[in-house]
Image (cartoon, rainbow, N blue to C red; front, side):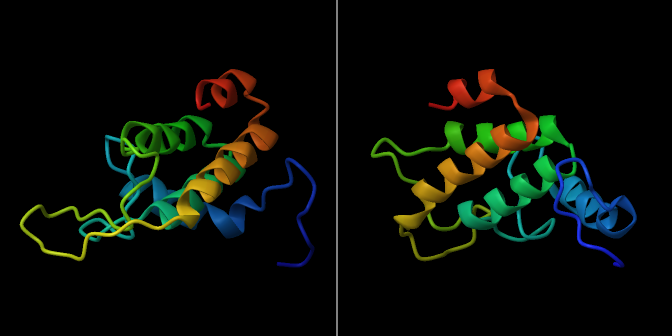
Length: 124
Protein backbone atom coordinates (compact mmCIF):
# COMPACT_ATOMS: atom_id res chain seq x y z
CA UNK A 1 0.00 0.00 0.00
CA UNK A 2 1.46 3.33 -0.95
CA UNK A 3 -0.84 5.68 0.96
CA UNK A 4 -3.15 5.72 3.93
CA UNK A 5 -6.87 5.35 3.20
CA UNK A 6 -8.72 7.20 5.93
CA UNK A 7 -11.31 9.16 3.98
CA UNK A 8 -14.85 7.86 3.64
CA UNK A 9 -15.14 6.15 0.29
CA UNK A 10 -11.41 5.54 -0.15
CA UNK A 11 -11.51 1.73 -0.17
CA UNK A 12 -8.32 0.14 -1.59
CA UNK A 13 -10.15 -2.56 -3.56
CA UNK A 14 -7.02 -4.12 -5.03
CA UNK A 15 -5.68 -4.83 -1.54
CA UNK A 16 -8.80 -5.74 0.40
CA UNK A 17 -11.17 -7.40 -2.07
CA UNK A 18 -9.70 -10.89 -1.46
CA UNK A 19 -10.56 -10.52 2.24
CA UNK A 20 -14.07 -9.31 1.44
CA UNK A 21 -14.56 -12.23 -0.95
CA UNK A 22 -13.40 -14.64 1.76
CA UNK A 23 -15.93 -13.24 4.24
CA UNK A 24 -18.73 -13.39 1.68
CA UNK A 25 -17.84 -16.97 0.72
CA UNK A 26 -17.93 -18.06 4.35
CA UNK A 27 -21.08 -16.20 5.39
CA UNK A 28 -23.90 -18.68 5.80
CA UNK A 29 -27.40 -18.21 4.40
CA UNK A 30 -28.67 -17.36 7.88
CA UNK A 31 -26.14 -14.48 8.12
CA UNK A 32 -23.64 -16.10 10.49
CA UNK A 33 -19.97 -15.59 9.61
CA UNK A 34 -17.85 -18.45 10.97
CA UNK A 35 -14.06 -18.33 11.21
CA UNK A 36 -13.92 -20.60 8.14
CA UNK A 37 -16.45 -22.82 6.33
CA UNK A 38 -16.44 -25.71 8.80
CA UNK A 39 -15.22 -23.71 11.78
CA UNK A 40 -17.01 -22.22 14.74
CA UNK A 41 -18.25 -18.68 15.11
CA UNK A 42 -18.25 -16.19 17.93
CA UNK A 43 -20.01 -12.84 18.18
CA UNK A 44 -16.79 -10.80 18.43
CA UNK A 45 -15.23 -12.09 15.21
CA UNK A 46 -18.65 -12.17 13.54
CA UNK A 47 -18.95 -8.42 14.23
CA UNK A 48 -15.43 -7.80 12.92
CA UNK A 49 -16.43 -9.53 9.67
CA UNK A 50 -19.66 -7.50 9.47
CA UNK A 51 -17.69 -4.28 9.99
CA UNK A 52 -15.37 -5.29 7.16
CA UNK A 53 -18.37 -5.88 4.91
CA UNK A 54 -19.70 -2.41 5.73
CA UNK A 55 -16.35 -0.83 4.90
CA UNK A 56 -16.33 -2.68 1.58
CA UNK A 57 -19.80 -1.40 0.70
CA UNK A 58 -21.39 -4.84 1.11
CA UNK A 59 -24.23 -3.31 3.11
CA UNK A 60 -26.80 -6.06 2.62
CA UNK A 61 -24.38 -8.79 3.70
CA UNK A 62 -23.40 -6.71 6.74
CA UNK A 63 -27.03 -6.12 7.69
CA UNK A 64 -27.69 -9.85 7.30
CA UNK A 65 -24.87 -10.53 9.77
CA UNK A 66 -26.28 -8.05 12.30
CA UNK A 67 -29.76 -9.49 11.90
CA UNK A 68 -28.32 -12.93 12.74
CA UNK A 69 -27.17 -11.45 16.04
CA UNK A 70 -30.59 -9.93 16.68
CA UNK A 71 -32.30 -13.24 15.88
CA UNK A 72 -29.95 -15.20 18.15
CA UNK A 73 -29.90 -12.90 21.16
CA UNK A 74 -30.75 -14.82 24.31
CA UNK A 75 -33.66 -13.90 26.58
CA UNK A 76 -31.31 -12.22 29.07
CA UNK A 77 -29.86 -9.98 26.32
CA UNK A 78 -26.59 -11.89 25.92
CA UNK A 79 -25.05 -14.21 23.33
CA UNK A 80 -23.12 -17.45 23.71
CA UNK A 81 -19.35 -17.07 23.53
CA UNK A 82 -19.11 -19.65 20.77
CA UNK A 83 -21.41 -21.15 18.14
CA UNK A 84 -20.53 -24.57 16.79
CA UNK A 85 -21.51 -25.43 13.24
CA UNK A 86 -21.52 -29.16 13.93
CA UNK A 87 -24.26 -29.91 16.49
CA UNK A 88 -22.63 -33.13 17.65
CA UNK A 89 -19.53 -31.24 18.77
CA UNK A 90 -19.11 -30.52 22.46
CA UNK A 91 -17.85 -27.26 23.85
CA UNK A 92 -17.93 -25.26 27.05
CA UNK A 93 -21.12 -23.22 27.27
CA UNK A 94 -20.54 -19.67 28.53
CA UNK A 95 -21.36 -16.07 27.80
CA UNK A 96 -19.12 -13.04 27.38
CA UNK A 97 -20.28 -9.69 28.78
CA UNK A 98 -18.19 -7.61 26.37
CA UNK A 99 -20.05 -8.87 23.31
CA UNK A 100 -23.12 -6.75 24.01
CA UNK A 101 -21.24 -3.46 23.83
CA UNK A 102 -19.29 -4.54 20.78
CA UNK A 103 -22.44 -5.43 18.89
CA UNK A 104 -23.72 -1.90 19.50
CA UNK A 105 -20.36 -0.56 18.27
CA UNK A 106 -20.60 -2.61 15.08
CA UNK A 107 -24.13 -1.45 14.34
CA UNK A 108 -23.14 2.18 14.97
CA UNK A 109 -20.11 1.69 12.69
CA UNK A 110 -22.43 0.38 9.96
CA UNK A 111 -24.66 3.43 10.35
CA UNK A 112 -21.72 5.85 10.13
CA UNK A 113 -20.56 4.23 6.91
CA UNK A 114 -23.88 3.50 5.23
CA UNK A 115 -26.03 6.33 6.60
CA UNK A 116 -28.85 3.78 6.94
CA UNK A 117 -30.81 5.31 9.81
CA UNK A 118 -33.78 2.98 9.33
CA UNK A 119 -31.57 -0.05 9.89
CA UNK A 120 -29.95 1.58 12.93
CA UNK A 121 -33.37 2.35 14.38
CA UNK A 122 -34.64 -1.18 13.68
CA UNK A 123 -31.80 -2.70 15.69
CA UNK A 124 -32.74 -0.87 18.90
